[in-house]
Image 1: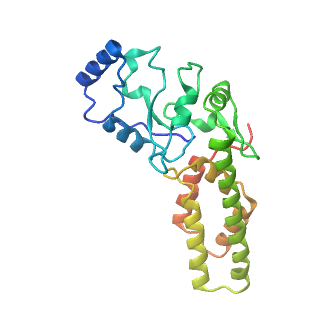
Image 2 (image 1 turned 45 degrees about the vertical axis):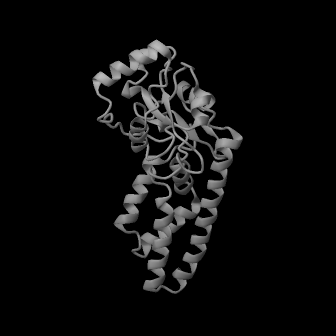
Image 3 (image 1 turned 45 degrees about the horizontal axis):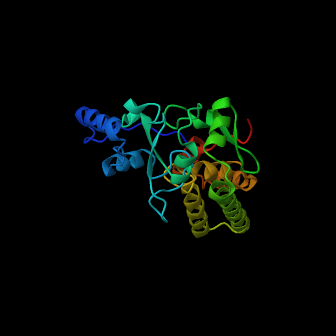
Length: 246
């Protein structure tokens, strides 16, 4: 989970429409929130991802559901209140259900203040709100979320190991073309940890805490390969990354 920036509601969601849809929901329980213009705007806010798990939605059969942070069953007046809506995967939406325990809100809260990713890549809570989030949202569910996180970790670590190995040849015989090639490799890897990508918190945390990355960075700096573009990407990863300890 990463921090999301709030976006204004879609233009179609006028105060009058909110009033009408809320009245209809109270009258017959209709799924008045299930509008494409609502889903599309929510996905713009989350870069096409579930606000909680960061899986990409609308790919590989993973469709988006409109999640009510305060459950509509207990708060019917907030059924289409914009600040109460988040984009979620079916898994996270189902896990949360109508639970009202305090959990991390990706827009109002700063997730990294409440959550951390331990050395085994288990999501853990720093605070009561963080601990609630891990349990209620199933953030360590083996099949849905933990297994993909571990696969990503292994792939990132293998790529960093390969890049460090290739860099050893550059240190022995420096050429401009080799430098450009290695820079391209690193930039492409860092881009995977930016907020637009799936599981960006996992990718960013893995990269920034891997000893191979730290070694690569030192060699790049020593050989004037550490560019402003790489610096910007590193800052972006720092935004997305979680701590590895409480």
